Amino acid sequence: MTATPIQIIGAALFAIAILHTFATKFFERLAHAGPRHAGLWHLLGEIEVVFGFWAMVLMIAMFALVGSAPAIEYIESRNFTEPMFVFAIMVIAGTRPILHAASALVSLIARAIPLPGSAAAYFTVLSVVPLLGSFITEPAAMTLAALILRDQFFTRGISTRLMYLTLGVLFVNISIGGTLTPFAAPPVLMVAAKWDWNTSFMLTHFGWKAAIAVGINALLVTLVSLRELGALAPAGNDAATPRVPLVLTLVHIAFLIGVVVFAHHPPLFMGLFLFFLGVAHAYTRHQDRLILKEGLLVAFFLAGLVVLGGQQQWWLQPLLMSMSSDAVFIGATALTAFTDNAALTYLGSLISGMSEAAKYSLVAGAVAGGGLTVIANAPNPAGYSTLNPSFGPNGISAIKLFLNALVPTAIAALCFWFL
Image (tube, rainbow, N blue to C red; front, side, top):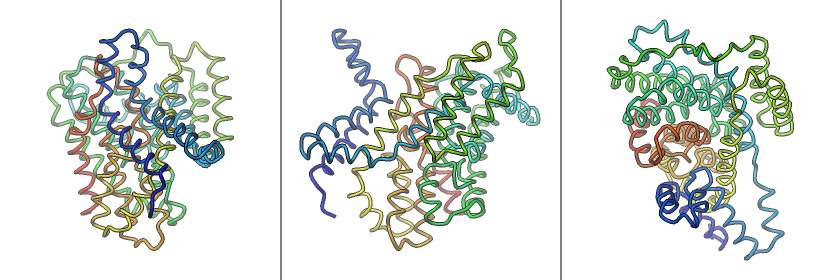
């Protein structure tokens, strides 16, 4: 496939954007060293801004080289449903009623697990909540898990080592935990309808393997950190926080379910979201601050990924077509670290004549590698945005995230390949 100048520029900007995600700390240091332009450097130091910024550069290049009409046509051809959905689901899932309901469920399950201190709750958050993502979608599960981990663990003085271990397992488990159904994990959603993968298929080919991998990852990190977690008293209910009326909690759950049900229909789920904002404003005494800013930043990140990702088909598709099923599995796991796994499986869905083994390998590799970087899986920026402040002024290190996700990624890959 011969690449056009715009495609080559798009690939180059995509590579620069990936490097930029690993270099955000450099821009933060520039902000402190040069206060005159500190605002610009702080902006470029925000990882959620990276892909949106370089997508803007791509659009400027398109306007300059091919004209306004093709540039506008390209933008209008992009599907921004996922960024909008992630924004809406993040805000609803991050509300006090939903968070209290999820925390109560975690506490109920944790009481049945014979582990000391906060270890039982920790294990439950990293095992049950990711699997719950198969039903409420991965972005919602990521938001809930990150908020619970932040409030019950990250703000209570646990070690940086444990925080990075937790982050690696969380990202991997969320990525594979949504594969029990065909509608919750973005990389599965991209191919499910075209390849006729229903819930029965997902459960028998992916779901039970994912559940085993999620359990192993959560148990391993819990046992490795058992001394520290055992010494941490279980988080109690904050007496200063008023109880949320049951009816209001049920209303919030109904909004959450409604947005999930209409996840592929932006006018419907955004209409529900605007209605939800009205309800939340009417009962502000039962709400914490809505995470609108965080949700918008994550949506901006994903929208930039959609714009830049649309220019990568010319090199990704031939690469996938040239591989055997074994190579596809390994290649998809590795490539996912550098491109959104949903974009990867979408390109695979465009290839005609793929064998069933190659299809399985592509999706299995894409979800297994979905925790290696912030850009590897659509829900990851939501977790990053929530937990990043807990890591101090330097924030989350992309390299340390990658290193701490390697072992859980390997466990997930082994379960998908050998079970």
